[in-house]
Length: 294
Length: 265
Ligand SMILES: Nc1ncnc2c1ncn2[C@@H]1O[C@H](COP(=O)(O)OP(=O)(O)O)[C@@H](O)[C@H]1O
Ligand SMILES: [Mg+2]
Image (cartoon, rainbow over all chains, first blue to last red; front, side, top):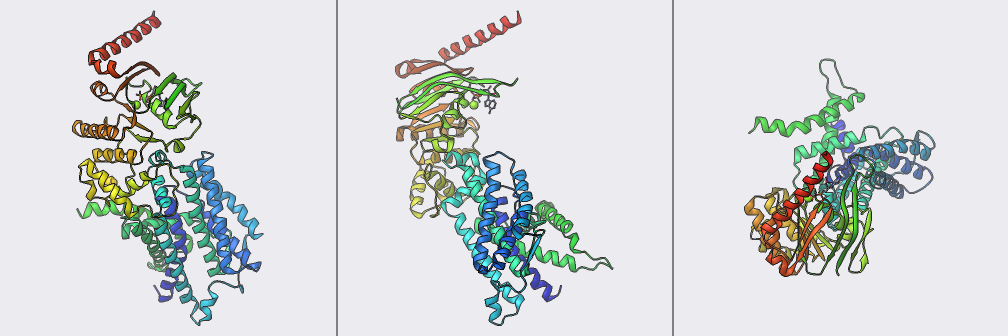
C-alpha cells in the first residue's frame, strides 16, 4: 500500500468512525440492530449540503444534520416501541422512507459542494496540505466524540441505557420507561451517524442519495474488528476499540483493493463481499483461537 | 388498608381456544407490615397475581388501590417507585454485563429521575459496602466485577439487596429461592427474613414449600385455579400444621377429580 493510500484509509476510518460509534451505541449498548443508518448517513450529508449551499455556516450545518439524524432515529425507536414493530423491520422502514426524503431534501439525487465553504478551510488556510488537515481535524472530532460517549455511558442516564440493552425487565422493575430510553438512544445513535455523513459530504465535496448503501455492514464490521483486536472489557475500552476498529477496517479494505493476485484484482464493487467475509472471520476468530491455542 | 385488590379478573388469550382465566375475581386487602406467604399448585395464578400487582399487565376487571390511590392503570415502571421485586430466575434481577456497583447504583435510583450526573457516586459506595457486608459473601471487595461472574445464589442475594436498597412500600418475591440449591436457598431465605423484619417491609412471598409458608410471615394465602381459597392470619396461622394444608390440598384434588368424573359420565 502506498503512503497516500494509507493516509486515505486512516482519514476514512476516522470520518466513518463517528458513524461506527453510533452503530456501537445501538448494536452493543441497546442490543438494537439498527438499519436506519443506511438512510441517516446520507440524510446528514443531504441536510448539511443543502444548508451550506443556501449560505449557512459549515459548522452550524453539521448541527442541523445531527438534529435531522436524531429525529430519524427517534422515528425508528417510536415504530419499534410504541407501535410494536420488530426492531430490524422498524429500522428498514425508516431507512426506505429516508431514501425518498433525502431526494426531497436535496431536490434531486445529489448536491455538489464544489467551491463551497467547509470546516476544513481554516486548517488549509494555515498552509497544511488537504489530506493532513482532514486527518488532524477528524482525529480531534473523533477523540471528542469518544470522550463524550465514554462520559455519557457513565452518567445515570447512560447507565440506564446500558441496562436497557442488557436486561429490560430488570430496569423496568427499577422504574425506567424503556420505551423512552430506546427512542432517545436510537435517536442519539443516528445523530452521530448523520453527523458523520455531514462530515463526509464536506470532505468529499458532495452529498449523494446512494452514499449510505452498506453503512450498517461497514459499521458492524468495524465494531466487531475493534472488539476482536482490542477486546470488550469495559466501556472505555469498547468505545475506543470501535473507533480504532473503523480505521483498521478501512485499512483492510484498502489493502484488499490494492492486492494483485497474478492479474486478479478486487474492484470497489467487491467491497460488500470482502466486508461480509471479514465479519464472518472476526465473529469466528475467538472460536478458532480457542481451538488452536488451548 | 394499605393495598386493596378488588375483584381482579385476568384472562390470557381471551376469546381464543387457549383462553385461560388466570385470576377470577381476586379480592385481597393487605395491611401495612403484613408478611404474606402465597402457596398453591402450579398454574394456580400466584405469579399472575404478583405480576398484576407490579403492573406487568392491566387486569381485565377490578381495581388496585395503594395508599388511597387508584393505581390500576399505572404502567409497571411507574409502580416500581413503590414496589421492590425479586424474580425466580436469578438472571432476571441484575444486569450481567454491568459491575456490582453499577447494578446497585441503578437500584439506588429506583423511581427517581435519571439525569446526566455520575452513575456511580463515591458517596454511594459506603452504603453499598455496608449493605454487601451484611451478605457475608465477600462481594464488598468485588465492586468492579461484572455481575455475570457471580453464582446464581450470589446474584439472587444481590437482587434482594437491590430490591430493598430504596425502601419499597411492597416487596414482591416470586419463588425467589426455587432455582437455587437447598443450602443457598436457605441463606437467601435468612436474608429475606432479616431484611423484611429489619425494615418492617410489607411483603408478598410466593413459595412452593409449605414448611416455609408455615414458618415465615404472619399470614398465609392458598390459591387454586385463579382464586384465593384460604386466607389465614396471626394466631390461627401459627397453629396451622402441614397436615392441615395437605388435607386442604387433598380435598381440592378430590373436588377436581369429581368434576372431571362428572364430565366423563
Ligand atoms: N403470559 C402468559 N400467557 C398465557 N398464559 C399465561 C401467561 N402467564 C400465565 N399464564 C397462565 O395462567 C395460569 C396461571 O399461571 P401462573 O400465575 O404463572 O401460575 P403459578 O405461578 O401459580 O404457577 C396458568 O394456566 C398459565 O398457563
Ligand atoms: Mg409461578
